Image (cartoon, rainbow, N blue to C red; front, side, top):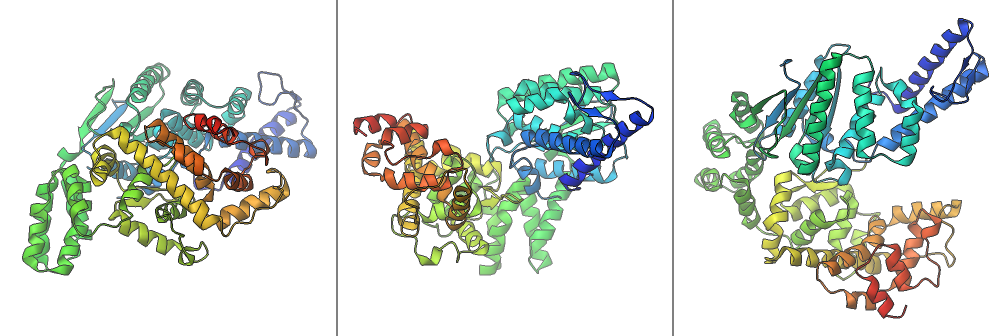
Length: 564
């Protein structure tokens, strides 16, 4: 059912409800709804026109509610992960960073989906610290879980509850989501429910504590109502909180976990000599100490050493590699040559306002220098393979892209992001003060945005003398063409000011930037990609007004000081 196209699922729901009302009419009843029922003011008499109107209203209301719950990167984490006891409500899987918890959770979920009974229901959420705010919050989790449930029987009818429709218009908050989720679990008759919730440590700790308390109370209610609910959690060995009704296991202590590491090495360590391969595999398993990701990082180094030879040198690689992930990442940073684009790439991954798409990251990093990017990097020449190769080389293989239609850049593992955020980037820049690191990084990102706009976009961009209204047909056409022609422009137009404002807030002076920046050209570019009429700038808009409209409170004083 989950693999059906949304339109097909919505039509199936509408048809089933129409049949329900047909049965009522056949029994000689007229179904006049009041405020406590599903359709306020709708009268259905079983006619053909009535069926059509009812079906359309059902589909529109369901789609509206689902749209209010969904968000773009809702499934990004689970899609990126490679597949590889009833007395308790909770099974809590704990393990070291990089031990393979997410991979195991994805595997268990997939196996459960393939082998579940017809009346069982399986749902999941994978927290994602490298993603956008919703991806690492309990608001995002509940929105995703409810979204999944509403697309399955027997919860589809709940999507038409007027209270939920009204809430979707007002916007969802944690209280309304928890109330909705509780109602779906307790008030709808269904078979056993299982929820897989991965990477609790990638959600803020205070939210985890609140979430676990909520689940404890929910399970108490499930006991009273004899509802079959199981929740499988995974996290590192923190957060240091506990929960009732749970069984726990430590991943790196499980015998089968060592077997999985052995299988991974066998599959990916492509060395013809069986003797050498077995020797290296033994060293790696001993050094990894149950950390799957350690093996993932070291195998490419071994294969490179094997290609370069000789064999004694290859044997030394695992022996010299530190077993702690942090020390291993330090070793990777100093091995081989380092691209001049490594530091700006790290800064974009750590300090961008949102995760960047492939083309956005490519042009963001390529705009580090103030010189024109050049014809070789024109948008109609550079393809996906070229961008992937550039980013792979610049990042030393530590950056990947999420799967799905809107692929976004991220570090290949949360432990990599943590290392660079805590010490790795500061070490590359020889900076000890975290505040200074943030300030200089945001200033660098602002310069990249300015370079892209002024050296890549401006020579090729021809804005109409009088910009069309954003909501007009001409305005929408201009937006589509501009975004298509300039992949990074939409982010850069906002980012050039937003990052300068954050740099100023972090103690990196930006007065000279405000004095020299071409606000008129920036306003013209902004108007061409704006989706809302009221946010378009007039020709007389002041610098202070533009800064205020973009929420740049720390730069605003410079706008007034300049008298504009």
